[in-house]
Amino acid sequence: MKSLFFLFFYLVITTNVSLNGSTQITPLISNTTKKTCLFHYWTVYIYNEIKDPITVHVQSGDDDLGNHTLASNDNQNWSFCEGATFKTLFYAHFYWNSNIAFFDVYNDHISDTYCTKREFRKPGRCFWLVKEDGFYVGDNLRPYTKLHDW
Ligand SMILES: *[C@@H]1O[C@H](CO)[C@@H](O)[C@H](O)[C@H]1NC(C)=O
Ligand SMILES: *[C@@H]1O[C@H](CO)[C@@H](O)[C@H](O)[C@H]1NC(C)=O
Ligand SMILES: *[C@@H]1O[C@H](CO)[C@@H](O)[C@H](O)[C@H]1NC(C)=O
Ligand SMILES: *[C@@H]1O[C@H](CO)[C@@H](O)[C@H](O)[C@H]1NC(C)=O
Image (tube, rainbow, N blue to C red; front, side, top):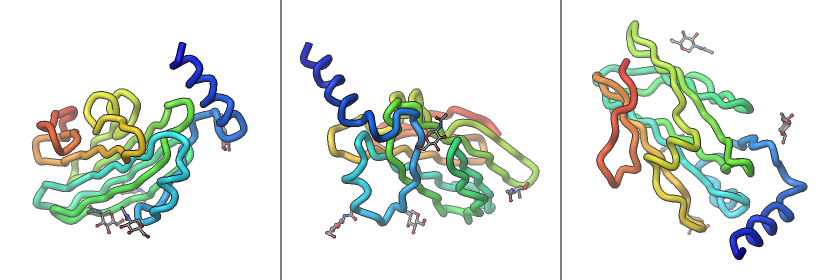
């Protein structure tokens, strides 16, 4: 009953905002946007643990972060507010020499299963490690899980 009321309350205060789950990219350094997220605030990190540079291209339905070349040990990270309908999705293409990989780097399932737990007022974090034998995801606290091959 309590949680129903809470849900109702959330719906009321968010009705005029965005109910279609669109995402908003916010610069990581901006410290104020974190406080204005109605729902959870997330940062996703992609680390290149290959000895060669790789190119990463992250996109969502609303945003195209463009091609980023990551030197060995470099990372790309971006932050966003979780959509009100919890349908936030980012996918990425990865290029390493002649290898190409393509998959979701952030969605509800990934976030619920591998990233940091949703805690009130605590920003969420997901980490991807790109290695020669594939792609690993985790919260940087528990062991990483390999989800994809090249
Ligand atoms: C979702 O919302 C954005 C702006 O908040 C709007 O531009 C877009 O057209 C909406 N998409 C749908 C499918 O309603
Ligand atoms: C947020 O801003 C405050 C004051 O401007 C600063 O002290 C704090 O370190 C910042 N936090 C982060 C995570 O950048
Ligand atoms: C991104 O880089 C890849 C690999 O170099 C290339 O095939 C692709 O066309 C580039 N995409 C854009 C939008 O520049
Ligand atoms: C996140 O990316 C920015 C560049 O967009 C970089 O300056 C920063 O060091 C990165 N964060 C971490 C923890 O490496």
